[in-house]
Length: 361
Image 1 (cartoon, one colour):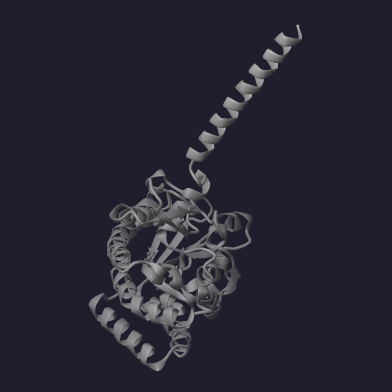
Image 2 (cartoon, rainbow, N blue to C red):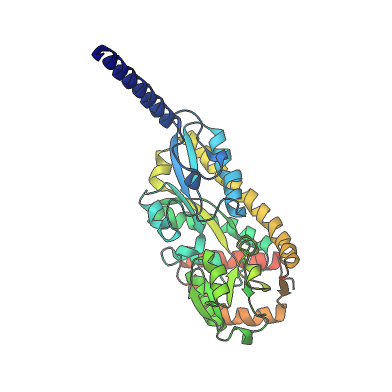
C-alpha cells in the first residue's frame, strides 16, 4: 500500500515538473512587449540579437501620423538591416508627452516624436516651427519644414545631446469653433485651447483667452464648455471627431505646424557607420514621403470635414492680413530669440515661400 502511494506521488511530481518546463518554454517565446506598447505587428522584432531602439510617440495607432511614421520610417529601417530594430510605442504608452524631450536627452528612451513647438521654451529654434503666418499653404509648409531641419539639428546636437531624425508638416493650424470666427472681433474673449507656448501667445494677441491643454483633450473640453475653440489641423479634427462638438472651421493657415523625431546623440554615435548611413537615409526618405502624403491628405480633409457637417470658411486675404499685422511683433520677438544669422536665414526662406506659394482665399 505504501509502495503504491509513493509511486503515485512520484508520478504527480513528474507531471508537475513537465508542465512547469513547458510553461517556461512558452514564456521565453512570448513577445517582449505587449500590443499596447509595441504598436502594429509590422514593427515586431525579427529573429536574432538586434539592439532595440524604443521610439515613443503620443499619437495612437491608426492616426495618420503614426501610420506614416511606421510605414515610411520604422519599417524601412528594420527591413534594411538586422543589427538594430526600432520598436514603436504609440499613444503615450511608454512615456507622457511632457517627458519626451528630457527622456531622449538623458537616454531614458532612445527615440521620441512630438509636435516640434511643444518644447519651444527649451529650444528657441523650435518656436519657429509655428511662426505665425510665415507660410500661406500646406505646400509652403512642407518646404518650410525641410528647410528648417538643419537649423533644428544644429541647435540640438550642440546643446541637448540629441539629433534630428526627421521633421514634416502636420498640415498647419486652423480655427475650429462652436461659433463662426470670421473677424478679429470674433476673437474677443474667445476661450481657445492652446497646445504650445506659441499658440498661447497667438490666441492672446488676437484677443482670445488661451486654455493650455494637451491636443487630445480638445473633444471633452469643447463638449463640456471649458473651451469654445481650438487650433488644430484637419487630421486632428477628423481623428478626434471634433465635428461632433464644434461645427465651424476657419481655414486660414494661422501658423505652420511641424512634427519631428529625435534620437539620443550617444545612441546614434554608437551605431556603426553603415547603420548610421541607413538610419539617416531612412529619416530623409521618410521626411520627403510624409511631407508629400500630408499635402495630399490636407486637401482631402476639407472634403471629409464638409461631408460630416462642418462649415468650412476660407478666411479672406484682406482679413488674414489684419490678423497677421496683430501678430507681426510677436513673430519678430520669436526670431529675436535665435542667433541673428539663423533669424535672417528664416526670413529669407519665408519670403521665398511667400512668393512661390501666395495665399489663396
